[in-house]
Image (cartoon, rainbow, N blue to C red; front, top):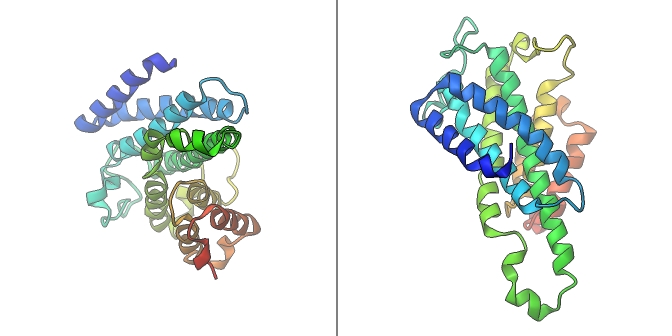
Length: 249
């Protein structure tokens, strides 16, 4: 997909959300997810051309997929948050099995982390460029660091990602059959743990002022088996980037 076609894909997504077309939503989610990986790989290249546009596309993709999820499962809509996600027999109100929904949710959680990592990488490169300017030049061009339109696109991603994770975490408790990925012929290793790490990564690389305390708050409510060395490292990274780190002790 070229960037010229990005606007049309966004319009298709908005139409699917408005019409609650779950068939169209599933098709669009697959398109967004397939494009997202390519964009992320390109964004990790230091001298990537059109980096601003690629990061913007990734953030748009991330928000669009979050918007599409309630079309696949109406109970994922914010106003249905308190209702049980799955039926007593393990079914859903949509045509998608719990396993399929969980597989999609995991992908969305991962791409959320990738989007914010790419934005952080882009922001870091801008800071390096701006660091070579004089103070006067930086004062005249203060918007060059963390462009406002990208900050706006990234603002809600960590909150939406955590809400999605918590929604499935509560629904998956005691139901290991849903956690198993039936689309792959191999067992998944601690998929909830992996999803948790992606959520914490979203906080760590976000522009949230209190990202350290938000990441640690989520970390603290997990059971001890979820508090791995990698998880500790992600939380420490969140504190290192956080603007509220004076409150860490």
